[in-house]
Image (cartoon, rainbow, N blue to C red; front, top):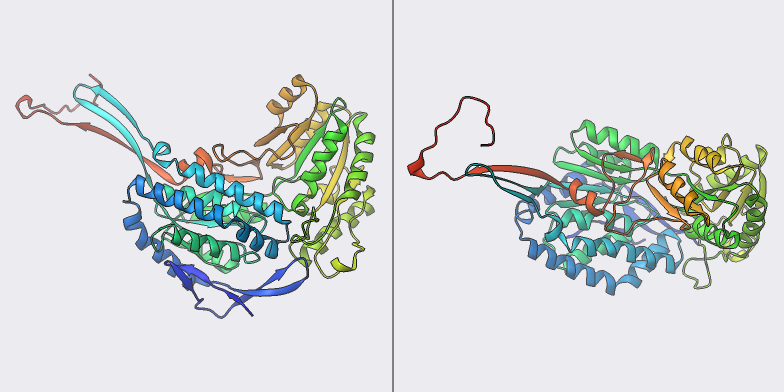
Length: 498
C-alpha cells in the first residue's frame, strides 16, 4: 500500500509514529493509499525546521521573495491537470471543478506576487521640529494552516502564499482524507526555489492539530472547517497566545423574489447546491421562495435536479461526483429521512442511486426538499451534501428576518430584477458575503473571504488585504537626528508636537 509521508525541511519525511490512516477513492469506496498520522514529535520537528528557516527567510529581500512566488505560479499552472487529478481521486469532485479550484488558488498566488506594494509602510515628515514618524510591517514567525477536505488546493493557497510572501514560514496540516495535493505543492515550492523549511506539511488528525495549537513557537493559526472545530481551534490557540483566524460552517440562503427570472434562478441554484456534491462552504443549501415565486421555483428545481449527471469525477460526462466518505453519505441520508419524517415534502430524492456502476461509491443524488421550516433538523444543521431545502416566505422582510435569525453568516444571495430590493437586501442581511443574481459570491483574491456570526471566529477574514495584516504586525518609529552643535535639551513634561 502506498504511504503518503510528511514534508519537513525540504524533503519527504517519514513519521516517528507508526499510526496511519486510510485514503479512499470516494467513487469506488476502495482504499488507494495510507497517510502517516503525525504525533507531537513530528509536529515539533516541522516547527523547528520552520523556526530555523525563519531566521534567514524573514530577512530575504522582497524582490527575491517575489521571484520565487512568480516561479511557483508558473509551476502550479503547468501542473494544474496533475493537481486536479489528485483532487478528484481523493475528494471525488469532477475534474472541471478541481481545475477551477486550482485556478482560484492561483489567483491568491498572483495577489501575493504584489507583496512589495502590499507591504508598503507610511511616512510622516516633520511631525515635530526635526522629528519624523514612520511605520512598517514585519512577519510573525512560524504560522500554521489547518485546512479541510473539500478544497485540498484552494484553501491552503488562501493562506500559505501570503504568509510566505510576508516573510513567515509555514506548517500546513491538511485533511488526512486528501493529503496528496499538499505534498505535490510542497514539491513545487521547492522547485520554485523556496528555501528548505519555509513550507512544511504534517499530515494527521486531532493529535497533530492539538500539537500545533499548543506549540509555543507557532505564532498564528489559520483554520477552515466546521463551526464546532473552528470554535475549538479559536479557544485553544488564543489561550496559548496565538493569533487566530478560524472560518466555520455555513447555511447559505438564496432568496428568490417573484420578479426574478425563475428559470435563471433555478439553473444557478441547482449548480450552487449540487456542484461538488454540495461540499462547499459557499454552497447554496437553503432557497427562500418569496410569494408566488415558490411553486414555479420548486417545479423548475425538480426538473433540473433530475437532469444532473451523477458519476465518478474522472468521467468527463459527470456533473456531480460522490461525497467524501461512507459516514458522510449516511449522515446526509439521515437528514433527508428526518426532514420527511418532520413533515417536509421530498421533491427530488437522492437517497438511492440506481446505477450499478455507482453502488460501491459514496454517492448521494441531488435532493430537493420543499415546505421546510426553521425548526427542522435539515435546516438547523449544516448538511454539507447535495441537499437543497426550500422555505417559503410571504415578503422580502420575512426572508431577511429568516436569514438574520440563522446562527451562520457566511454567504447569501438574492435573485431579483429590482435594484431597490437588492440594495435593501445587501444592507440589511447579517452576512459576510452577498451575491445579487450571483449564487456563490466568492470574492476575488484581492478581496478577503469570510463570514459573520458562527461562520467566523477571530477578527480577520482570510487572504486578500486582511490576510496581509493577519500575517504581519506593525512597528511605528519616531526618529530624530539632531545636529551636535544645536544640542537639544530634554523636557520633563509630556512631549508635544512643536
